[in-house]
Picture (cartoon, rainbow, N blue to C red):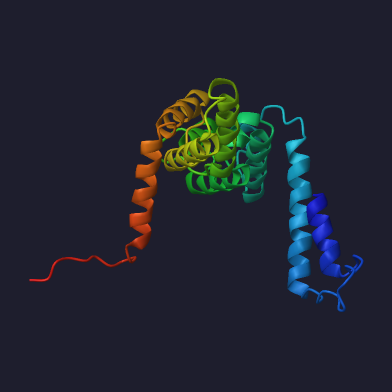
Length: 226
């Protein structure tokens, strides 16, 4: 929120000019100012949702008054889902709460009020249709855990950064392909790729594979001419 407000002040030209510059930064366009204001308002609202005591609200709570779930009530339910995610440390570290809320709303609009909230969330977080993996957070958590492991159990090794970078990237990539809201699943991926990446030969093989892929022209298949 503070970062966004600072950006907004900068865009408005209210921040003091930096010493050594003869000219001030160009003023932002009206569209840029409006976009910055919208982002600030959205971040403030999401922070408010994350701090609420949400209690428990199921799908029926949005239809109990008149038996109908309006578009606005569907949006309110999606906000509730965002709040649940934002207040759950593990869920927000493995799934993008904003993306998950949007995906839930899309499913609710597609399926209508008869679909159970739990069933929609199971589809989005624990099935082959799961989406919205927070790969940046997963990578960061894996890297931190791996470096902590190196600190206590591989203190003489000099390849900790390389090992943990490898483990973080591979864990995040695998989780991104098949995200599951399950601590044991994430733990299994961490263990698998920390073991894999502790072997310098495996890391070298991955680098060679990546280099070969980068050297191959995209969309071009080469073959021996007759």
